[in-house]
Amino acid sequence: MSPTASKPVLSVTTRAALSVVIGAVAGGSVGALVDATLGVLVGIGAAAAVFVATGWATLWPLDAGSTRATVQRENFRPRVAEVVVAVIALSGLVAIVALLVAGRSGHKDAGAAAALFAAFAVWAALHLTYATQYAAQYYGDPGDEPGGIDWNADEAPAYRDFFYFSYNLGMTYQVSDTSVSSQGIRSVVLRHCLLSYVFGTLILATAINLVVGIVSG
Image 1 (cartoon, rainbow, N blue to C red):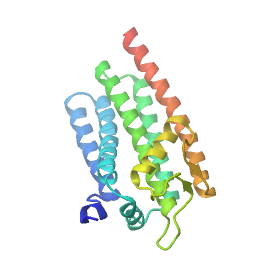
Image 2: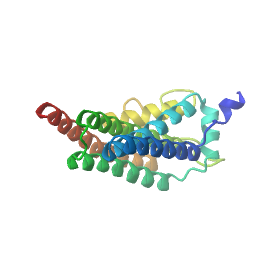
Image 3: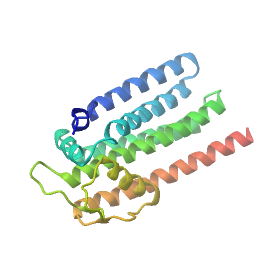
Image 4: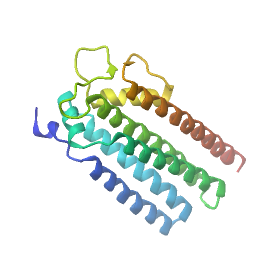
């Protein structure tokens, strides 16, 4: 196992900080040069997109051993992380909807594109964070026996497997070819599905509103 594979270049704290900085710079620049409302939408979308891109780039290459080591090194607090990501995701989506309803931007097409991009970027960030939570729940603390999800495979799961599990839940609101055997993970799955349903409904409503606005405008 290479040093790079055993230790991700960017920790979750670094990735989150980088995302906030880039989002603030992008949003501030667009807000100052073009339009304040458009700037907020661009800032939200940029921050979420950077968080997702760096998360996938950092975690996807890791094998099962590196995944377990990363989970335990990050000192993950599942309940705190879940509350934080739910609040941030819903706040971001509510902000997008509120800005669209306000309709103060004079750049309708650009605003619509930025709003859709931001909504999908926040959606992707939500499920990325849940994927890391499932990995933390599965591997637990050092010395704990891994388990809670039956992958129907002999090899131990890596982050990419938890991505599959999480994004599948986010799109279908159910597990597919895996089985959940842990009560704790099952509770997280329920909350994840409920939040995903609310999120998906709001995104659909936002998309319809944008299309109607563009066509009628």
